Image (cartoon, rainbow, N blue to C red; front, side, top):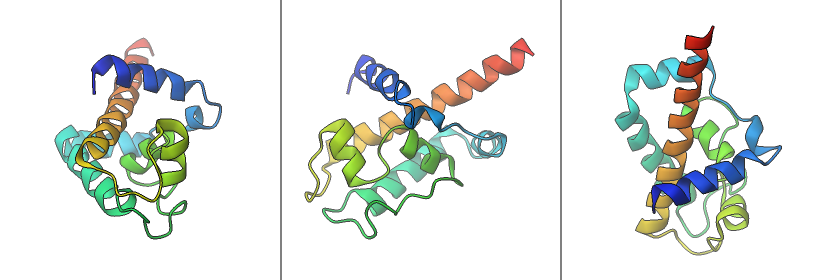
Length: 128
């Protein structure tokens, strides 16, 4: 997926009152700094493939915690937390396993959200 499409999707999600309330904590940012973005990306692939990609994920709608790992926070911020949200926001059908391209799109979207959060927080630190 093109960077501009990801950027447009992130802007659209940012306009949602609910989606825009999600933000990384300092603890999340420290975790990302310690582990590195590549490890976080690997975690995103694991979480999406295990928790969201199956045709009927276990506990769908409740499988993604609202806090904890930065990827979980990003999933809520990007509406990739459950199949209902994925269908509503990204028009990817429920009841059908996610394909490779769909998993890739979701991970790129999650990482774009995380990178914007990290960049925003770095910028705020310089302004203080």
